[in-house]
Image 1 (tube, rainbow, N blue to C red):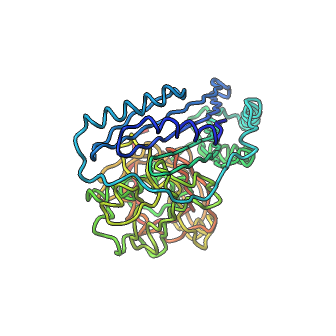
Image 2 (image 1 turned 120 degrees about the vertical axis):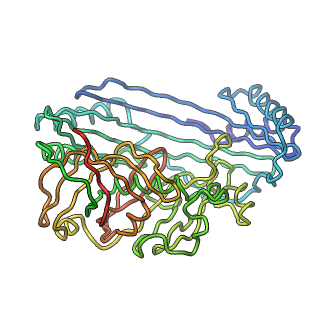
Image 3 (image 1 turned 90 degrees about the vertical axis):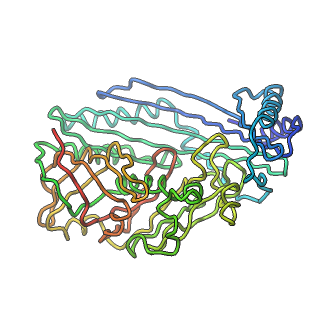
Length: 445
């Protein structure tokens, strides 16, 4: 575990070696414990502790960036010297104004006891329970149980000193049958003790058991009911395509020119809510700026995007505390998104559907047209036909070819209950949705 006072003291000592106009050091540490299993056996159990310090030095609007994994005093000072040298060799960036100045950030230290105490034996016991449950239904299982503690510390020559830790736990698994039937489920919590292993396993098992002898559906526009994971996968790609200030400034975002205009249905409100208790994430970004709540879409109307200090200045606004590490090329990005819940349940959505498709999650989602928020991918591990208000036969996986904004514009019902869904180090709090006119295509196999 990285010590707060010692870490900040080391970074500040290295800062003194700088000859630049402004200098920033950002430490990113990750403690990862991972147990992976396949064919109902654990095949990998590992622990990794990795820490990197990034140095950003600015001389006459020239920006130099370097990094080191050596935390010794000598190595940190050498990294600062290297960043200063790189800055001298870089072309001037006329748009660079300044590193951010100090702002107080809420103290969130989310090293939950259940995460700290999560041992390989506890994860092995969890896998054993999953295997036993699958075996009772003549199924095998594969998946991963991941427990992570993140540490971030930032200091800069203008006086920023930030240190924080955050933990997250994730269990995902697939239950597989001999006839190609499969079911999938995922659980996420910032405290590992809140991962409900049995419930997660039973969700996957139930879908695998019901996925025998799938039928084919013809290509068409269907009413679909998306579980929260599927809604979250669409939300993640929507964020990639337009919820950051860099893509907005470069006119590559679907939000460009649309702020204040209706872009989805009235029932869609999406908020970047980093301080929500469900997330328990870091309270500041990789520049040391406090993360702020940002309303991205409110009642269907485009409201704003997240920013870092660089793009906030270009957009004549203030940083919302969403800088990524200094070596990234993506620009600012939301990390803790939430979609407001509605008034329905999944059972009510099914009961109200005369013919439709129930979808657990998607696989290999990718971009088709970012400005139209159009993506492709396939359904996977639990796709079923809905007829006369009941979930029935399993359906062979189908390809989606869908604009996400159009899908959210066609959301007829939204569940009151929401679930946490993680992907690519982004946590989302999302409901289930009933969506009309969702494009599905027949696939081979």
